Length: 259
Image (cartoon, rainbow, N blue to C red):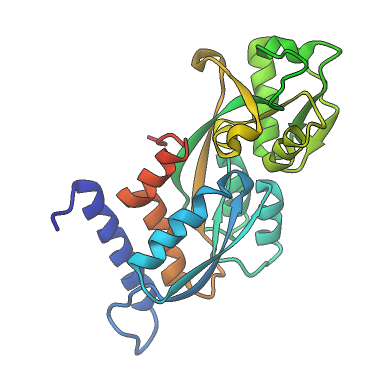
């Protein structure tokens, strides 16, 4: 099968990863394919798409298994910095990832996707939310993420950019917490990623935010320095960033290219 430029770059990256790691071990083989199990700690907004990418990765590299730990990016970074047995870290913002990189616990990150914000409401939209400005109404109960996590800082920046004052009644630890409040009809609206709205399907209704008034967050992924399986960890990082398969899956789930 003829490979395109992206596919060729990806294969070169995976090969380089395997050789560079295995080649440093005395008596090790010159080359090695990814094998074994890795644990990936990933932002909760990747809950739906990453298992699909992992299935494609496992098919491409028989003998590999990818397990996941999903949660708020800030909490995941704290876990990695505390020595949790994680092989790969994927966060929903660059500043969050750099807390792990600067602490010496994550390798060079690669940017693999972008996301933007949307307003999610229960299907009936009983509060009649039609725009971001409606969230400033005192009769609209709104949920958002805590500012310490990427979806919360993005919501804060979104409100500031649009000059609206919103006082959420709850600050969740990750975006799926916000989405859950909306789906349970516990709030009138929640600030989530556009990919979360797509994932929820008919369980929510939504209001799109114009591109020129929206904010964007970029997702980085990196191998954890202390990984017990560095070859497979780095191969997975390269696969997410460079393979046409993974990038196509990300597009299908609503994520945008990071470049």
